[in-house]
Figure (tube, rainbow, N blue to C red):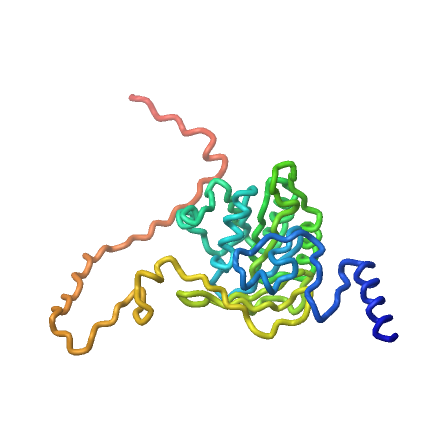
Length: 283
């Protein structure tokens, strides 16, 4: 009788509010989801993919961005609408993106000076129905800014008249692991390591369901991984010991020395730019 009442109470609680779920299983996503493109990652996420119209956190190592994790999502979102990249510290190689099926004309890059400007730009972008993905990079996000971005993501809507259109955009932010907040309103929090030539590991730090102690391996080999054997470095090939058939390379010829001069340019005052002085005539 106790077990029956407990089950009835849990069913009633889950039906009462979408933010209530059982801790021993994945919860039903409160928003629609889009597949990540990685089967191993889809199986451990509620709804089987990225939540749309909700905030997603991707913590990365310093001086890195989760390009490989998001590559399938970028490809799918580019077919839906505009990709807005706000404050990314690294410039995307659009030629490589085009080779992976991402239309460069759908990419909008916004350069910002600080986290406050980046948050404002992301909020403005989410008010456009043509935006299908908004990717924001924060150096040190605040909890107040995260809540505002989560609120803007929940209000964002897209034009659903086209068949197969996402009802809401994919909103995510990347942050260095050392600067990731202890608590975040993001419904999904992940950490992606640098990985190797064959793939990378993704740790699920927060999800609507039970904790996942082990990271998820994503089989995402780099495009040039098949060109070089696994025992050799892609930038420096090893030479067999005792191989005298190859003559050593001569030292490189030094470049000619070029002296640099530094010129100090002083801006003219505003009134000096209005009119040039009259040239004196012949006497």
